[in-house]
Amino acid sequence: MTSEAAPMTDAESPRPEDGKAKEKINWIAEIRGLALMLLAVLAFHSFLAKPFYIPSESMMPNLLVGDRLVVSKYPYGYNWSSLSFHPAPRAGWRLFGSTPQYGDIVIPVPPDRDEDYIKRVVALPGDRIALVNGRIILNGKPVPQQVEPAIEIPVDLNSPCDEYSYPGMRVTRPDGKAVCRMPVYRETLPNGATYLVIDHTTQPLDNMAEITVPRDAVFVMGDNRDHSADSRAESWEKGLGGPVPLANIGGRAEFITFSLDGSTNINPVSWITSLRGSRAFSTLRPAIAERQPGPAER
Image (cartoon, rainbow, N blue to C red; front, side):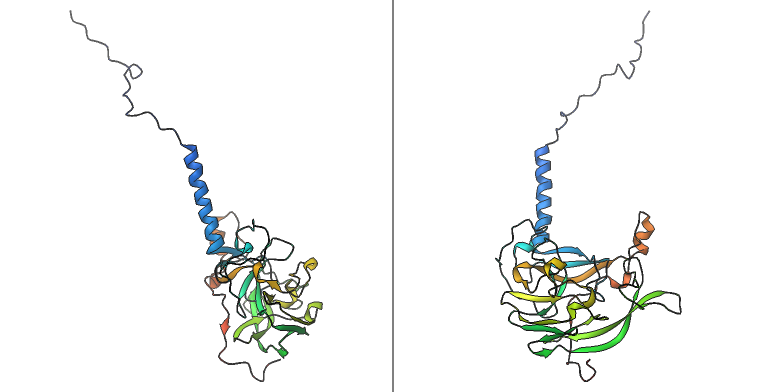
């Protein structure tokens, strides 16, 4: 009588031999690859371009809180402030250095804090600059300012147009939309660079005795003249304490990538609805006037 062997259970079945032993993770190689990737990002940010976020209203109406920009790092050469996060000690050296032009929007670093500001160049090395009742006097001549129609900036969480800062400017249009209606001037510098500025009240920074900008520095101001701590303000006032050394200029603002109105939250829908679509890819280089303003100057 023949007997049939009982079928082997799965537990008893011989397991196929692995073709090769499991490879162990090479943690040293993984860490090295991550470090190289991080260095590449830091090098890109330090030598080519980096993103920049607008946290204040000092450059209104041309830049709003919530704007995201691209800042190029090479136009004026490289210095200690070019490096991301400013790990290098402060020093006066520059490589491939060049001088900003009138109207450029630059990234200056204050003399006593490792923070990045954003301001506009209004005086170059060797210029004489003074302020009289908010008006720039450059090399003995008033910089032209022409009255422009009031602009309307939509009110949102990033641009609330509070009554204390902008008295009487928040209005509701016939369509029910709240806007900040701001009086503006068009300022035009000697090279024809022209841009809008807001100057709606009288305050201490409206007047400054004439100074001469050192040969290795520039004088910078915010476009929102009554709400900007810049070269007019002392460093203890969170200003820049006068002309900014070129070695403390970390780059030039080029264009807006996108802008958010402050309503973004965990709801993915808000990632779209909070976008200020009309601001995307707006250039930040100043327009060049074809002719100087005429009799309508203030």
